Image: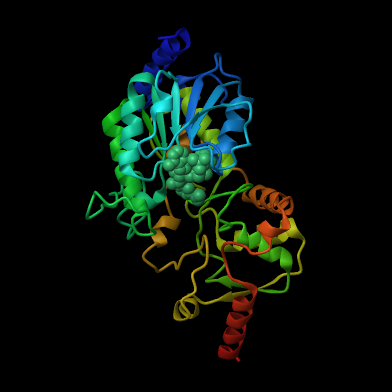
Length: 370
Ligand SMILES: NC(=O)c1ccc[n+]([C@@H]2O[C@H](COP(=O)([O-])OP(=O)(O)OC[C@H]3O[C@@H](n4cnc5c(N)ncnc54)[C@H](OP(=O)(O)O)[C@@H]3O)[C@@H](O)[C@H]2O)c1
């Protein structure tokens, strides 16, 4: 065992004990999270080149850590030419990791319990801390406000591996279980983000709103300005993840803007403020949207079965040090990032309403209210 790792293990056990004893993680350290750590940690990311991974890599490098990646070399393989890559597939191809030793592993790419179990089992003896990126979709009971103790969704058939809209959440719940049983709760951090957004988001779910606002004219907005929504800026998630590994913050944490603090009306105001657009909003009732089977990204019917997932209690992560930046900053930087993308990427936005469909719905809504 190298010295770095031994020293890390000592602080790890202390930090874990402090958290287990109910002390605030801040109380177990006198360092500011932004401060350069007293020693660099050796970090392996399972993934690293998609959306959240690059933000994590840059933040870790900025704070002086040593980062290595494991992935198949398919996604943005040119992104980090100076970072060591262990090439392999999580589905049975972990051999390139043989002989390695790290302080922390961050599992960004675990969707299938068998893959997660295999990586956790193989890495458990050669790491001190496993951080698994999960999701708020793990919760099985969305009929009441959700916190970290809410029951998790279950798969009827635990051998299922196909990731669909329906299986994604319960599969991630099972992945969490596998990490905990292979690595142990005292060495595991599980982060459950809500919609992750900001520069680099490939889904366009949040991006749709400010980008559509920028186009101007009459714009369809769902429900009411008072409807709750929740997001997590990818950079805030990355910062908190690095805080977790530096300060050995152990446990399960929802990561999101505080429940009730961010509403559709705020998103509209943010979008207008960062685009200086002439957009005029038309708020369309939930009944109308349901009647026309319209689903919109980020927003949910406040009376629908998913509503509780827009009122997730994120206070535990905030108490542990998660800092949510002003949502206007997220809107500003998302629009700035969008402007840097090539035309073939921005020609068709991947979420939200196509212009023709939006115009059709606005006409139907106007006729109904004439
Ligand atoms: N986006 C959201 O709003 C949201 C919300 C909640 C939770 N999450 C969670 O956030 C994580 C997604 O993060 P991300 O995609 O941005 O992470 P990332 O680490 O930036 O990118 C995913 C990485 O996984 C690698 N990968 C994919 N399949 C692989 C395989 N079979 N074997 C080895 N490597 C593989 C990809 O590289 P190669 O293709 O080259 O292998 C890529 O480097 C997921 O755990 C997801 O459940 C996302």
